[in-house]
Amino acid sequence: MKKCMYCLEGKLGLTKEHIIPSGLLEMYPEQDVTYTSTVEKKVQSYKDNQGHSIKDVCETCNNNLLGPLDTYGNNWIRNYFLEKYAGDPTKTVNYDFHMLQRWLIKITYNVARSSGLNCEWFHDELGYILHNIQDQLPPVSIFGGLHVDMTAFGEDKALLLSPISSYRPLYVYHSPRILENGISFCMKRRFPLDKDKMKIKRAEHVLTIRFGSAMFLVILWNKEIFSSAVDKFNAIFEAKFPYR
Image (cartoon, rainbow, N blue to C red; front, side, top):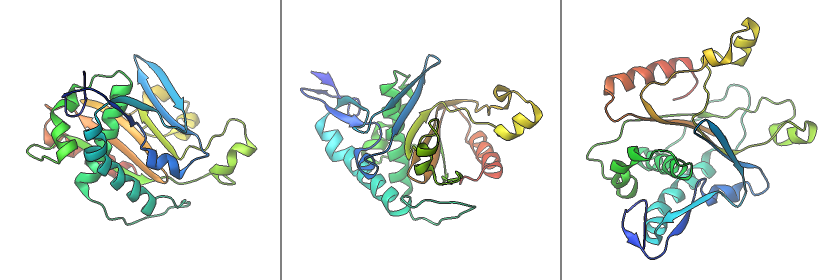
């Protein structure tokens, strides 16, 4: 018997859990789907429209408990974020805070396990992910924004014009390099990119996620961090970047 990584019970058979939900893959059947993580300073990338998955979840957890989260997330993306955006757009959306947060934490947990990262942070949050138990909510910051296509002819056509371009409507990136001032700023001032990298202190996991036109920055904080420190970071980040 093998242990399910969600209910932590021994099971005779385990099923595959997709890193990027299969419902999202079906929305973009002909596009590159990219899943990237950094393990021991080595970047691992996968492009697989069948969907990268990890086989360590029992059927009950996968179908009955995690399935509704994927259904909610897939429908939310389909309803709001299949449209493409340009210029300086704004969009008002309705969402269930806990369903969305549990879905994104679940995806982050899948990424961490499949990458061989330390998953200790998630052990106390399995009840929240599976059953919405809210006795003590985890220290999480989730910022959302819109992906804006700034290519000349549309990013889905850019690959036809340039061999170095790629259209990636779905990706998950663990440990991204976030620049404080941006590439243009650094190039004009000959400022090293590494020195412009944002330092997110006391973060256990940081991910950037793109699903259609939805962009997320997910930060899972060290459990010992003060809530005031999280609030301070959130306020500074929202003031500097177009995320909410």
